[in-house]
Amino acid sequence: MYNLECIKTRKSIRTYTGEKLNEDQKKSILDYISDDKNLIGLMGNKIRIEFKEMEGGMSGKIGTYGMIKNAPSYLIGICRNDKGSLLDCGYVFEKLILFLENMNLGTCWLGGTFERKQLSTDISLGKDEFIPVITPVGKGTSKFSIKESIVRRSIKADKRLDFDKLFFNNDFSTGIENERAKEILRMVRIAPSASNKQPWRVVVDDENTAHFYIERTPGYKSAKIGYDIQWLDIGIAISHYLIAKGGGNILIDKPDIEMLSEHSEYVASIK
Ligand SMILES: Cc1cc2nc3c(=O)[nH]c(=O)nc-3n(C[C@H](O)[C@H](O)[C@H](O)COP(=O)(O)O)c2cc1C
Image (tube, rainbow, N blue to C red; front, top):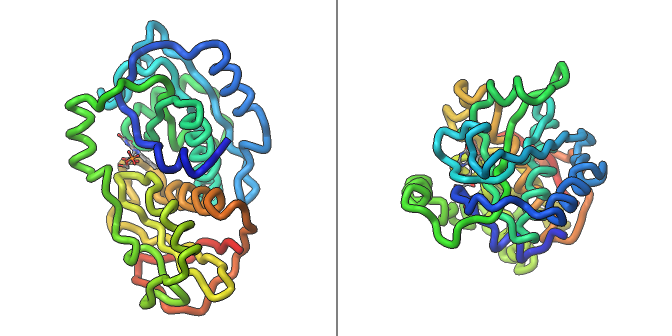
């Protein structure tokens, strides 16, 4: 259902053929999003996911500011607006994205470029709920459109920060030598993140416990978006780590090491 291959092949798809999902595909998705085990995150929060089909294969009803073309359907992620829920939403939603990749369906995390206000009135939200993310889902066109290529180039979508800037051994000044640890972390490195900022940093200790930190991008907390989007990125990174490692337990066990910068915050560890 989730494997290394999906992690390696996934890319954001913004242009679709418009072809509707068939009944089998729809059933697989609906089964997936109604199974609690796919919806509960590492911190115990249950994420709600709704499936919406677009009439006539157009993206008209979900405004994406022209970013997404011809998507036949969307999945909508719903949770509370706090750190733990956002981390869990990142974790749960990325596993959904990888599940769809495994079905050969295109997706694109959208945290900013959709009309949140309009959609929030169309979907019935509970008192504390909001919509941090949606994704189109459908068959992507075989090539990136010109507009899509321009977007990808402007956010350097095919690049990631150097491995040694992201991952460390025991403290933030030592690089990782262990080949197995490197193999797992390469799968974290290629994860998607909001504006491709990659705010995750990981310190692996000698017992092979991986300590995850968020390294916030200054000024990115984004008053415009209205929530702390980089917590989703951390949930995504942890999901890739656990898939690549083949499982593990999460614990809060802050190591006694000097932080990378004033923008760092310890999140959690995976043993
Ligand atoms: C939390 C999150 C929010 C994102 N929001 C948007 C968005 O609003 N609009 C958009 O076009 N892409 C969005 N993206 C996609 C990223 O730009 C993309 O993942 C990144 O550039 C890397 O490209 P790739 O997904 O093809 O590997 C988002 C990604 C994440 C993880």
